[in-house]
Image (cartoon, rainbow, N blue to C red; front, side, top):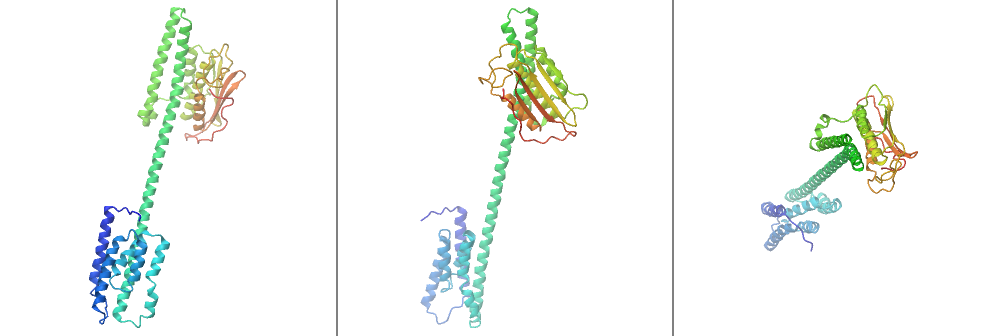
Length: 411
């Protein structure tokens, strides 16, 4: 026998329906037409059967269909089972599948055609009693069907609410992931540039301890200034976490800041030639910031993987077309330090460190801005080339599918 879990509310409902069936049998007993020649013993049997039928209502959750069938069949022989039969058919209609409910309804109304055929022969009291019985059974079935439909509606709404909540959680998790990735890109682009400059000057002091005192003082000043700028940039990036809504108030690099970026890189001893940006209207902030980050990361990679190599930066385009960015460094004059993973500027491909995350992040930046980025070794050096849309309005560019990729690896 399977165990039926009943809550307190279910127990209260069972007791209430038991009392309803019992009260209905007691109240209707005065109006039930009983033949005058009926033996008193059968009257007592009818009452006992009615009491047992009312008590059987408590089993409606465990055996709803057998209980309904038994009460409907027995109801044709005794007059006190109308109340229990109503409760039983209500339970079937409220809890059982449509096909099972249809069979029980068919059984309940099977006597109806015979009754209608003999209605002219029956006494008026019997006709009224029979019509009342069928009306009550039909009402109980309709009540049960309404209850089941309401429960299904509530379950559907609850499921939709749970799905909406789960979808909201997924969207929130996706937003948090995108925020983390954006912060990681900012940290890599901004701090990588600053710290690489600091590393260059610190390396010069390490390998040239006998340099003149003014040169050592200048290098130390550059190291201090680079560390100060790195801390400032770090605070700006962390500010995105603390107040993302203030993004517009936080100063962001634009295409016009390329000259300052190249000047900082030249201060470390780099040989960098800048062509552009074009005069006239400036691209939208997103496009200009993306171009700035591409050049910044490319100069950082050239400084790390191809020290001493000449670097050419070219930015061209117009609002009627697109913005093209190309950073190309020649083959380094000396040995290439073993760092970075694959595709360094004419250098190591052992993948000992790094992992190519910088160029992967730049390709993602370009894709989100609606453009493309390619990178790879060329003539012993390395080239990073990207194009970005230059819309004539301030509308944000649509995201284009990833294409192109990196020509010969990443670094």
